[in-house]
Image 1: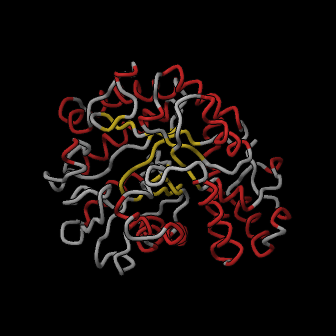
Image 2: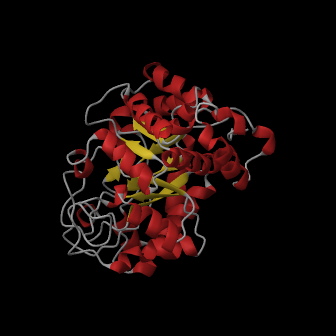
Length: 375
């Protein structure tokens, strides 16, 4: 069974012990699963990191963190993929490290040019979103995506970072339109294919992440490379796919927030949406009503890496309402990255009751979502 927080387990942070119990009971987690969970474990579940290595032997340290409940998940890049048998063995080892609280084993497998698993390692490739929308209706797209999800599940992945809800507002967009990542400029069409993608993955037991909130389709620059200001290009209708999918009860497991600055719409002072209370708490949670897990885009992209120090990035994101911090571990690769992030979270939890309460709430949402991985 998954482990919520026992009221007495937070003796080191007494001001959140009762709050923790209230939140997790309200989330209807199993009463017979009560066990002590430390603030380190709660903070650890908020972290997904990339890693070095492409063999089971090279993931021992990661598996130890997962076993201790102090790492929420891992992210695959192409460098981690040598062949499918090895990937499957690695993922089986990750899952075996903590069957009670399984890690999110994540990958970017949208289709087209955004695929970590390719024909080079024997993985069947999928057309881009643009090509699928041009050649298939949403029913046939669902069949294609179910095949993709089945193949991902077969080698042990349980989270695919997709679908893309960005609308094709700017046909010269260097990161969305250029790579055919959008289903189109019509919100209804985008929603139909997003639904096909999510439903297909759910049918195969793979979770998804709707991205890149509040909309990357109008940008003229790439958030991988540097600061992205969409103040003059972003349109309010770019929220429509998120709003309608969430409010109509589509199976939205996570929403991935992009590193996008939208001028007057936000916290000001050049704060991107991934670090913005306005976008995450006020709009996504409040106006749209999303109650699930909010994850950042890679926190080592140039859009935030070059403008916000590590601790500032982490604290701003959590205060904004983020549940999961995604770090590709490519900017300054190190085995200690999860330890570094967790230490910052724990330090601020001890210093600030409000910050600690956000960690507790995020832990509850994450554990609730991980219940789906046990079915």
